[in-house]
Image 1 (cartoon, rainbow, N blue to C red):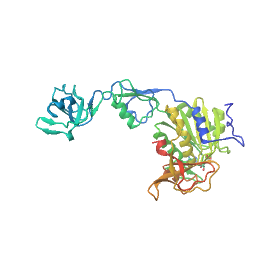
Image 2 (spheres, rainbow, N blue to C red; image 1 turned 90 degrees about the vertical axis):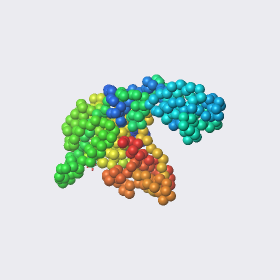
Image 3 (cartoon, rainbow, N blue to C red; image 1 turned 135 degrees about the vertical axis):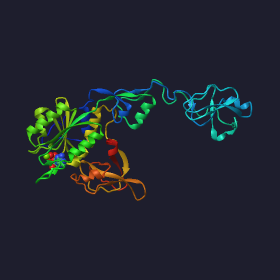
Image 4 (cartoon, rainbow, N blue to C red; image 1 turned 30 degrees about the horizontal axis):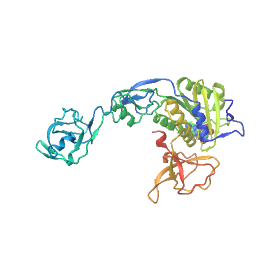
Length: 416
Ligand code: AMP
Ligand code: MG
């Protein structure tokens, strides 16, 4: 983009803040085309393409909020609150109109009989045979859930762009929506660049390491509800990288890579993308995870994450997940949700870049929640992300003292 001052990889290149990088990424991707109709039983985690509206009033009729006696309040005056119990209305049945001077035994959820304006809870009533004694001071117009009080027929109950939780499925079911229109699943192609990589189960040769990124990315993408295309391990060569990008573009809505995004001779993402598509290589002022490549092969976007597993995890959480949510059709604010929580640590040597350290909520000495950071700051320590339940965001150049409030991005709010 001609107006984008950061589309450069030359020395002295501009760096972006986390917020700028995310804004740019989100401006470059769109929800994928294509929807399907599924039963609500298959709706968990799917993104609504059309709103769920209610064809019915909820409740569908005035009904009792309590187990008790349905009465016409004005009838109490005649015989000092003594009424004959003339009918019984359990949930699932409907009674007949209240005759003057009578009460109906009624249960929670049952429709109130015609003429009833009050349900009196059973605890304050005295029953003797077919008669019930109702306190004269019981309130009128009480314990009745009114027709349409919760949802009016025709109302939108779940908006398009909502990612469906179990609560949404319950809500859809409550208005009788058996089938819903959702965006089709996003297909994401994944590859790992690196001649040193070996799959678990294979023996390690000299200089080789196991491909951990593939498994983290697959796990993340599965939790995000994506369909996966496995492009495997890609050797550090221009030809293999080009071919992989083209294969991914032919099969997927998004390509996610790890490794090879720097500008060393063994890093081929940049050149390959320039040959088969377009590239924007961004330097983001965060630690870990400085370089992030974004590109396009035809219409298929590509995100190139750093190879270092911790950096990959952080950049994928901060940037990859919002991009995926946008492509999936999720509406609204896609920034990773964070919360303010008390630091249970001191951070005395801040960096000039924003830092994202692996952190976990624990109970402090005073019994209140606070954040602990993983003892090693090294971004090569993968056990730190397994230990953590989120990322603490440490502002650039800022010293943190135990007890200060800091931003924490829980993994739970991002995926899963
Ligand atoms: P790169 O971004 O390709 O320069 O890789 C940076 C570091 O991450 C190197 O130490 C690589 O060996 C390591 N690395 C790259 N890809 C993976 C992977 N898929 N699994 C584990 N480590 C990796
Ligand atoms: Mg490499």
